[in-house]
Image 1 (cartoon, one colour):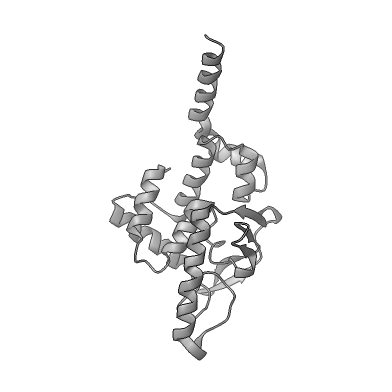
Image 2: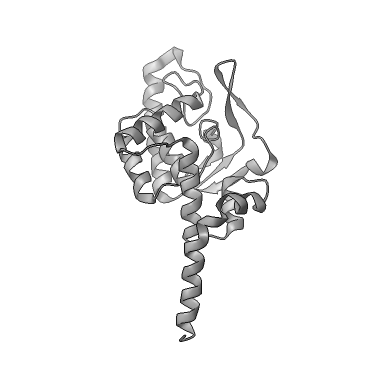
Length: 202
């Protein structure tokens, strides 16, 4: 697990990376590696600040292919922070510029994150962007899942109910979330117990 400070260092080190916005969105929403490149613009509501996960990008015969999520629970709506909404607005503007440069070579996939010609992004390219950024930040053993894991831990330690965290992550059951992340809320649990004792004057 990484601290919020370490994640911030990685995002800062990702400045200049083509897929920096993908990395940042994963870090703030807990999306899976394939869910971010499988995100469509028509599933993003920047006015209300939310996105819907309805697809995922997988590697088939060495090429990225968009398909349905692995489970019904993976289909979900995730709220966007104001910063994440701004990030996506920046992404939309950057993509519009690329579309103009590509001209007739542009593929209108409707995806939020694409290559320079509008085609789906290979999830491995996102992993490489994360690893390069982590190396520059001096942090070892970081994957896309590390960012997802850190988001989940941060939510739990902030007091977000484990059911809500399970919904955000798209887990098939709350038991999975508990098995993976239950230990992460130890600090929050101790804080709650200490707080109650203080309130009772003990």
